[in-house]
Amino acid sequence: MRHTTTGRHIFAMSHAVLLGPDDPAPVELCHAKGRERVVLVCDHASRAVPRGLDSLGLADDIIAQHIGWDIGAAEVARHLAKYLDAPAILCGYSRLVIDCNRAPDNPGSIPPVSDGIAIPGNASVSEAERLARRAAIFEPYHAAIAAQVAALTTKDVVPVVIAIHSFTPEMNGFKRPWHVGVLWDRDGRIAQPLLGALQNEAGVVVGDNEPYSAREPEGYTPEHHAASRGLPHVAIELRQDLLLQEIGCVEWAQRLARCLEPILEKPSLYAAIASLASPS
Image 1 (tube, rainbow, N blue to C red):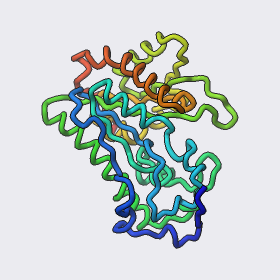
Image 2 (image 1 turned 180 degrees about the horizontal axis):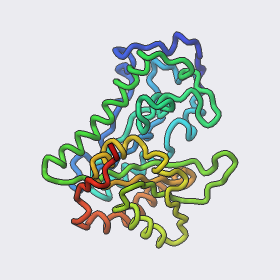
Image 3 (image 1 turned 90 degrees about the vertical axis):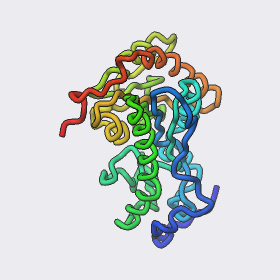
Image 4 (image 1 turned 90 degrees about the horizontal axis):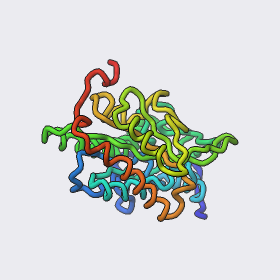
């Protein structure tokens, strides 16, 4: 366990030095030359924190819990990219530094508390520090997604956006029974057949907008890059205790690929539907 310091001055970083030479890149692009008309995204792929933020005042084993990242989601996304032959874009930093699936002006974008755990490094973040985190991590990540979507669009292809997340098996004393959840709102072109396919998988308990709902509201990433433009999209949640070992991540990536491939093969899917776009 690394010793951490929670003094306020530790977290006062300018954008120029927020990410140092030893820090990870803000974006990981996996299977970049994938030929499928799909963009996979993983908002909470990493538990990394910039060195200059001194672990946000948290012990490493706390950041490694579900509050710090979506456990197993990155590995599933990497394997699924290979199985679907599609590029995957993964965020390189912890959701506690800045949550890339929330709008930057959302109070939960840089949470002072997560699942009852105080985050000292987020207790009193100045506007300049917020902007530095946004510029260093949030904007490059979303620019990478936008570039992948634009690259397909310029080829007269309507891309599909699929977001991969994971969820903790228990929350607020409630043991969640679902193995996988399919999150969707106005656009059911992928979600509805995917729900049916997963329900046909032996022993799999499927949640329809469970354990979270895309209607309360939809996450920033699918809303910003897909729903607002009428592009087909879906968010998939996997229970984290199923992803603790590599074999579990591989099995779930294979299962998702098996269920998604017939859906993605339909030419009618690749169309932007203005009536499904976000209300102005």
